[in-house]
Length: 211
Image (cartoon, rainbow, N blue to C red; front, side, top):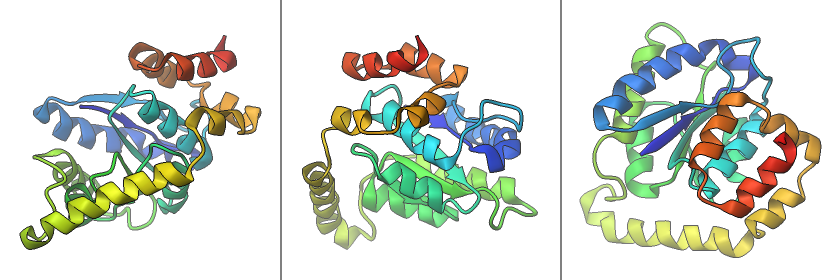
């Protein structure tokens, strides 16, 4: 599985801590990691709004399979990601959140609070979150006796989001161009996106802002 990590400006300094924990868990599972957001205070500036655009581009183009996003509280990153078709993002504070989201909702993104509650031992909590999110089979339901209804409802919700959302390219073309230009301006995002993008139309859209 290809996993993208992204941090915005207020929590950019914590990117190395989060990346280290994600890599420690994911590499043992054979996953690939792409650090596409800010990795320090002086990096290409992104807000949680930009992270939502980036997450949607990577997931809808199948450049990556999963996104780990976040901001100070995690709430802005959550809402920005879920604003787009093709993104099913959960909010994760502790390892049980990650496990239950993986089993019940089986989405493709997690939003974490990188400031709220980020104190002593925070790196351990993040590592355990990633262990629960990326180890084993997902979408199995919890508890076992509710598996059938949970799997069914996850499918219904996925279809509901498709039914009420705009076509993805139509949605992209309705966004403020300056927002998109800033979102896709980072070199590490561009490297991940253009190397692994599987949708020519989405690639052409992004290329308009980086050519």
